Image 1 (spheres, rainbow, N blue to C red):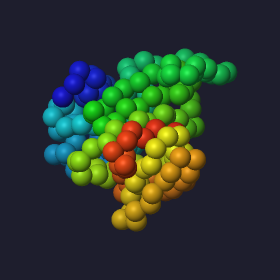
Image 2 (tube, rainbow, N blue to C red):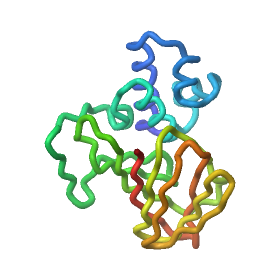
Image 3 (spheres, rainbow, N blue to C red):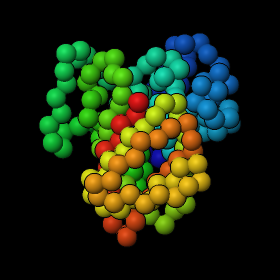
Image 4 (spheres, one colour):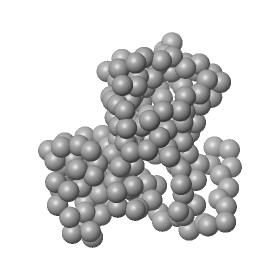
Length: 182
């Protein structure tokens, strides 16, 4: 597992320690079983953004703090120049670039998500709230609650993020899309 994922796992352990909560309690907040949560916290398994979102909502902590380790400080505005957003590569298949990491008290988390072509099975996740996706480049297979949708450049989708969902790049080409988690 790469160094960034190990750092996120350490922040999860630290959060649980600071809040004096059990692994069962934080697993429930993350909407996963305790054994699965422990794999995330121990750095044994890739940590989905949906899991971090669920924890951030439950414990009122910025999701980007869990992702990147920095506390947002800006309250008036936060400017992100082209290609300059704080980035994390969860796996070789997914890269997230935060577009508002420095703004404190956000009501939404906007990201540019890059999905590389892969033969791996689509990983389905769910998290609290809603999500908006707008395809910037490529074609994307998005599964929501068992329904398969193909989104092409310029297409957008707004959905209930509590439904199991996942995505895959099509045509053996990289896909980029704007994701806003609300």
